[in-house]
Image (tube, rainbow, N blue to C red):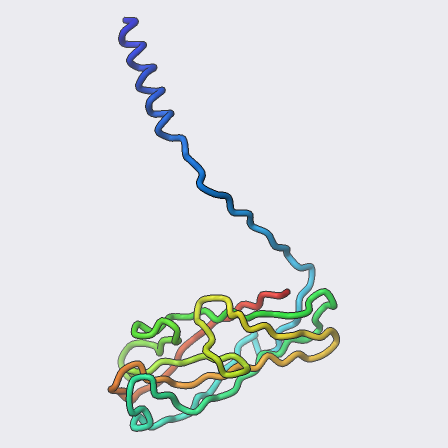
Length: 175
């Protein structure tokens, strides 16, 4: 009987030892929740439509070819004095060929071989699904205009005509 009890204790002890974890480092998470932030002004229901226009498929001579850019603006109003700048993160479905581009909807009647490129105010690439490093300065008691650009970009040598609808959500990170 003593052997059975000792074997049981040995098994429990061995299992307990296997459950301990070694730490190779520590990560501290910091931040804060703001009492008030800026008011977003992009349209009814906080929804904006950016019309990139109708572009002939012949305008895309090769993969990487881009249409003309279309400017769009996110307005931030009534910003508190403690909020002096902001960075924007655009989320959406990444194109399967180029993950930095916003995918066009799939299905019957949709264009293929093309996606949407988002750009910062200085027309540099705006990464999709990650916080943009471009910082917009904000002023208190002023309408702050955060300008962006978008364009179609060919993702293959052959572009198939069709609708080019896509959806992106955005998040504002205040500094």
